[in-house]
Length: 80
Image 1 (cartoon, rainbow, N blue to C red):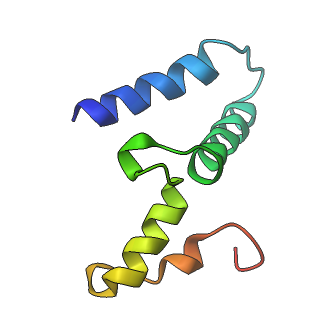
Image 2 (image 1 turned 90 degrees about the horizontal axis):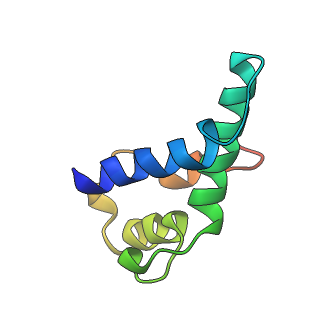
């Protein structure tokens, strides 16, 4: 639970508390950009210095039975 709380705090600190928003769509856009940057651009020590997407793909390759859906369909790009 502490990791979830820490992530929520990080999102709040880096987005909502530092910017003024005129419309709700601006908040949604910034949060989507933050999440994409986090999932595809930031390496985490707890994930053995992989970005979250790389970690998920490695798990998919090693243990595909753990997944209900193919994670490649969730990636950014032409299939979204």
